[in-house]
Length: 175
Image (cartoon, rainbow, N blue to C red; front, side, top):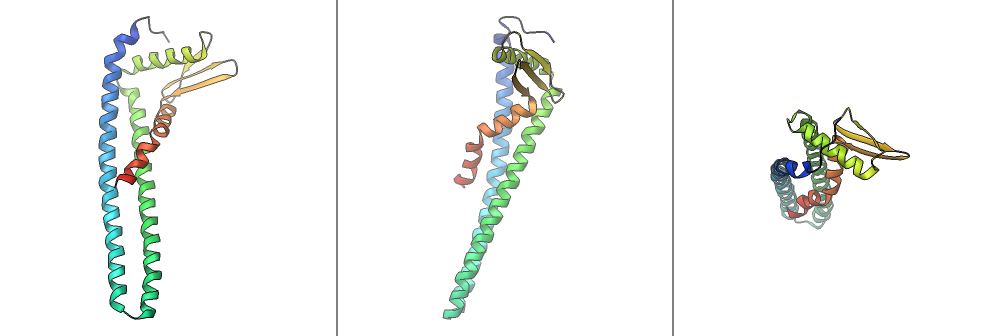
């Protein structure tokens, strides 16, 4: 594997910007779909809760009211479980999409440039005596003595998901 010559970082800036734009567009599409699905789930849950409350109020009797309160609490818990389950499902879909996009990077004609940048990053972090090898999963891994760095594409994708976890959680809060 060859290393990037000095000044190559500047030459790679358009590639970096293009990858950033593409990632931002993918994230925006995924976010929009997640918001839409979350809104549908919440609307259905609210409608179901409203139906249960209307039924309970029509029964009118004190015993029926007590049952309605218990039923409403169960419905809220069920609705909440449903919302949480759908949130988890959407998060799984987002994770799968991010991991798929990470795998697709290996097919990108710019991948050799990315590989060189990751190699240079491993060298910067571990030092010039580091042993840096291409990961079978894409990207690179490096070692220098007891220190190890994983700049494989799946690891970088997982790191990006963790770093943006707060943004993903805000999808549910904004609905």
